[in-house]
Amino acid sequence: MNADGSSGIGRREQKRADTRLAIQRAAVELFEEHGYDATTVDDIARRANVAPRTFFRYFPSKELTLFSEDVSERFAALVLDAPPHLPPLDALESALARLLEDAPSELDRRRQALRRTLHEQPGVTRQFAHVQDLIAERLRAAFLRRLQDGGAPRPGLTADATVAIYLGLARTLVDGDPDQRERIREWFDAVRAVLGESRAGT
Amino acid sequence: MNADGSSGIGRREQKRADTRLAIQRAAVELFEEHGYDATTVDDIARRANVAPRTFFRYFPSKELTLFSEDVSERFAALVLDAPPHLPPLDALESALARLLEDAPSELDRRRQALRRTLHEQPGVTRQFAHVQDLIAERLRAAFLRRLQDGGAPRPGLTADATVAIYLGLARTLVDGDPDQRERIREWFDAVRAVLGESRAGT
Image (cartoon, rainbow over all chains, first blue to last red; front, side, top):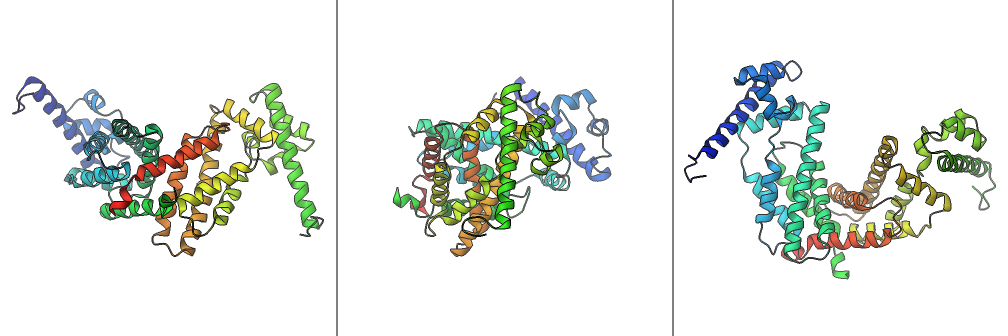
């Protein structure tokens, strides 16, 4: 793609991103106006000015409009991007801090609020678990690469342990909690406290 | 209860334990002889010489005969029993090491082998997840008490982090793997590697 994004591929990708966003925006508006249950895929497609089959090319189901699928990729990229000398825990903490610096858009905030209200919806819960699985998988691959590049012993197991620490954090975080930054800091303090002085003895 | 276990309560408890064991033994025999699917609760009750309604007083379902429900209690007791000055990770490691010293009975070994064969059975998978939930809950309570007694800051979050490390281990362990001792040692090494030298910088 050219620097000004004017190539054919760039334009096509921009158009896809615009359509995606239009669908997500239409869905959020309708969920807010009429409620989640009362809103159908046809309603969303109509409001977004696309055919229902176009909707399904972007989102396999209604609840998926409430999730942005890009976090796991960006998260893994931030892990790979962290200074190579950082041990996994510090690399994880630094990647999370940078992830939170991406200020959520107004649409993201409205979707977070809807997800909180809809956390009893099996579809939403399932999708949330699926998103966490995806993050865990990409996170593991990113740490595996860091650890292999650094010549660490047992890279696979160390990547698993890092993912376990992330998943524990994900369980304690409330989706869209405005104090997430503070929660995350406390979590890493707690993880360090778990080890206490034990390393001195090993 | 008297030291020789001869009180009324002691006798009743012994009888309950005997019945429980007889049902578990009958179930394992029948699963081995005829297969899990072909064995009914009535078959198991008949072989164990109890009424079907007695079976259900001990086990709500067929697959539960494949699990011993006492590990979580013993595990939590071992955590509380670990030297008070040990940081959570070391207390967890020490409790697990002692838990593994309890040599499995011949019946335990046969049940482990059956669980491995039946890991695709939704009932067995569900029960395994349930057992892990129970362990996580009791483990969290035990660590919470240790940390509160030790005046640690954020005891709840630190207990959560310890449980996350345990759950990560549970995901990497194969039920009944003869090399569990070695797997556990490697896991704790990996967890320490996750922190690397990061504590030096805090």
